[in-house]
Image: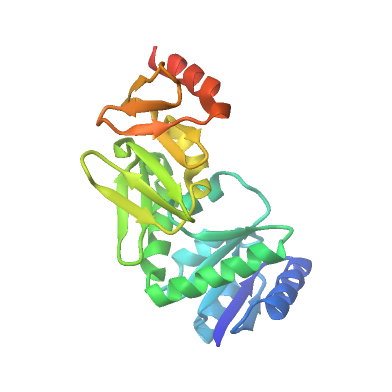
Length: 251
């Protein structure tokens, strides 16, 4: 049985999250509830939970402040937030999970399942530390992304990614030569991040770094060719948008 701690200053939010977890999540129990940074730290230290749902903004500080004050981090982290702004981008860079308020039952249950998987991989501590580092020096780290596989955590420069391909819930990041990194997340998880770094979606399953486009194949207009010779398909619906973006970015 996995122990869960909920940390949020809003009573209604706590009750909503508690009901969802108790009614729909499996093999878990609510072991503690806290209302702010101070009580959150005390609760975590007393209970030693497996999973923590953590609010971002609280009366006496932020979720980041709480994490920085812990001597060790031995739990899987799920942030609770009411906005989908910069913080969410940081979470995705570091593969930290989150749920948006008001809560969706499916999102909460899925987050719990992912947290349980993270426990088995024993990657909690290093992942959260990377998140804190990213939060402190975000302007310096916007050019990098963290990719987690079952055995490794990679820190790669976004500018070195040629393209990404998604299949059956997995995404493969491709680099110069034959180097590849495959992660167990779909393309949608990374689309918002990479679009801010000159990537374009040419197809439902393909994201391409515009910097590495060699040419657009005009004969049938169904694919582009990268500088390393890879051919990337273009869907009919994306064709005009792809041509427009290429002309604007490369000219």
